[in-house]
Length: 67
Image (cartoon, rainbow, N blue to C red):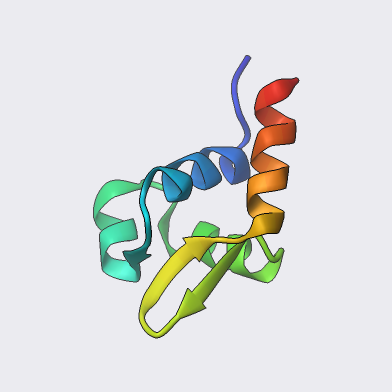
């Protein structure tokens, strides 16, 4: 089963404690638009210049991986 880009992005973000936009660009091919989508859906949050997964993102990720 292939995971959708949102789930792949959440997996990457969850594997890090937090990361900057540049670290995201360097290590995930989803680009800025995917990171911005994660934030707009409430799955990720920006604090200062760092991004991390939210509780809502953790719930989404667990539900997708469990299927």
